[in-house]
Image (tube, rainbow, N blue to C red; front, side):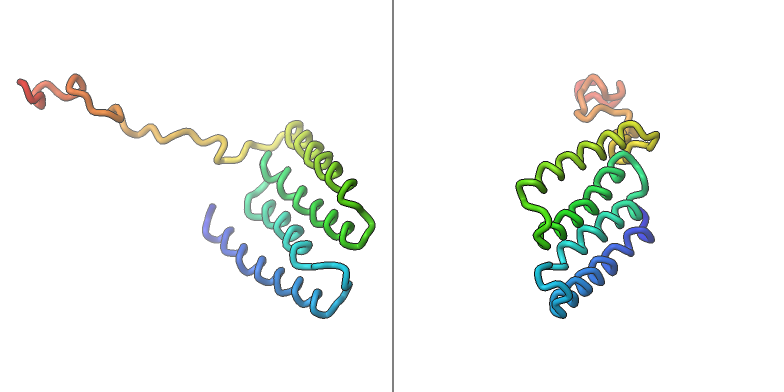
Amino acid sequence: MPQRKTSILYPSLVTTIGVGWLLTVLEVDSQIFWIPVLCMAVGGILVLLVGGIDKGTIVVGPLLMALSGFAYARQCGALTVELMLPLIVIVAGVLMFIAYFLPVPFPDWLNSTPNQTSERPKRLRIEDLPKGDHPNS
């Protein structure tokens, strides 16, 4: 990943933690612990911005944003853990279907092949040495 894209990560996350902390201290909603809720939402956005759109980020980014919404709803009392967990699995599955059917590329790390620049085998065998380099010649 180019340095320019990744340089936005730390300032974004530090700012998000500060905003979440401030909202918690000001008791904007005393039932909500804002830091993880906001970090999941911003993390999902950053996955898409920094990682680009591919079959991996199209699942992970929106899933983090959905998890942020589920965490908020659970802390407000609008959603129980028993209901939230199957919903998370359903959302993850639907996002996987979307990634499967959309014409987006696979992530670079999944497409990369090992570097095959060396023509010599990994283990040097006597048979592979040129004729003049044999110890017995």
